Length: 149
Image (cartoon, rainbow, N blue to C red; front, side, top):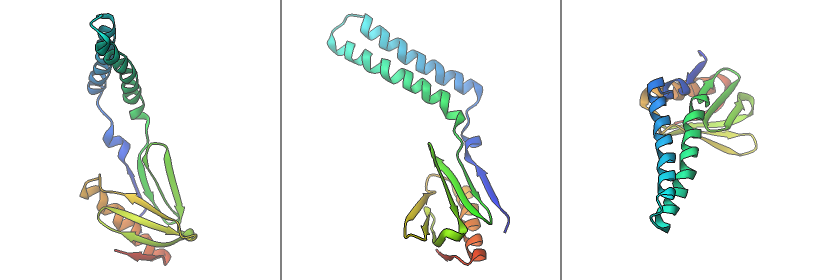
């Protein structure tokens, strides 16, 4: 079997123009928060302004950090490795895997101690899910791991 590596982070990167637009939106949210507080139009507007002053910087932080996230799936003869959520890198050695269940919406991996891990693939298109399913099924058969689905 040929090793598989799909880098989803490349597909999720926005162009420079979009990033500038996203940053401008965040700055507009912050400016509106300042306007709501400084406008002296009542307590409701002050509370909305405070909320906008909290949400605006968080939005800017998210826009700034999102290109730096690395989301990928790697399947080869020794491991299944993936990072599909923020900060969660998972790696499973084929020697420690007892059973693999491959479905359209995801892959369930059962390791030696009975722990099950679900790799959710429902958010990806069919063209992205198919090679992942095929690679995991193929390597499971190669390694003698019980593969269902």
